[in-house]
Length: 171
Image 1 (cartoon, rainbow, N blue to C red):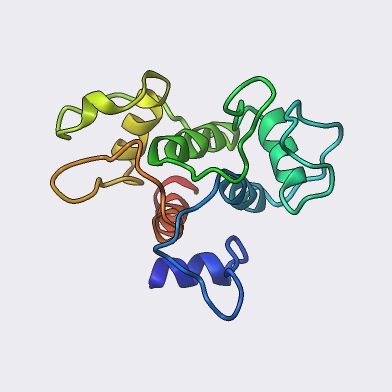
Image 2: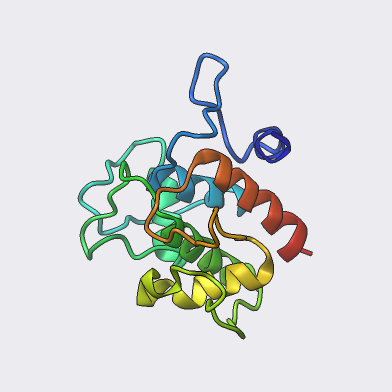
């Protein structure tokens, strides 16, 4: 509750309508880049992103352009962002790590993920980000000592990571 309230109160996450936040609902890729864009202060953007599935005037267009231009995301391919797809836990930490690096945070991973039973299922691209996120205290794993890297990130989990990022990483 505290993390959800803090993310909402700071204007970083909105509800889903009808006075609902839905913390157990999945977070989409568009929602997450929009949150990171808000954390960055919604800087003005110019140009476009190369993603055919991002419409010119959608609620997340500027966030996707910003995220692409600042290497927070490369999309799921050279021409697709997949804005409505659920963001996986490993995608979430990759986005956060890239944002943190952009913000001047040292995201160098110094350890490993051996303590987690499913460490070997983390995609190669996400291993450094996941390792950093665990070391920084952003990710603590889910039940049974697992990271669940390909599982969907819930809105509540993202709110929790936002609060942990703000308190553990930002100065």
